[in-house]
Image (tube, rainbow, N blue to C red):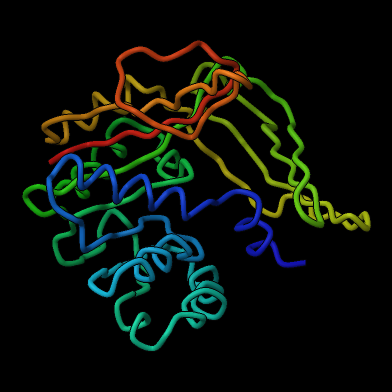
Length: 258
């Protein structure tokens, strides 16, 4: 059982993520993005997808955990060609202080920036990102919410060979702090409890967008997922809007332009 492999299979869809950021950047800026920084990169799977897309693409993958970076290097980076490996750099560093060349795009996905518990900390991070972008750079984030986001609950989803379990184990409505876990159970019944642990603040979209504006970003938009008319489910098409739906659970993108 390999928790990072299970995570990549059950949580991430880097192909769709890179489709969204590359297409949105081109629409906003009228040019193709070249340089990308993946903050809180984990196994750097997204960065690998980026450098595979085009021979001009360059990526920096930043994470504070040296062990997950080592896994990513052994299992994701090493499967790239020698030429592609030369265009990706793994950085064991703090996203608040990391030094990289100015980037076209910076990503903070999988709600990873929810680790910042105060407005001061969050604004500090957003200001650091702002300073790390080129003059027309774009910052991409995702966020989740809905009336079930503040509940203590578990959700299961069947995957190929195992079950993914999302566990919102604790929520404090006074501080919006929450403790979440990911568990895995193989089809043979072998459990991996608390494979991943997250102690987060559940940030609202107004809080996030206001802090991005305070940090200097000129335009901040929420990209909301559309609805498939036949199934009533999400259609994986995200467009900027000022009006969302009061769903039990939702995931959206936030796009902040420097």
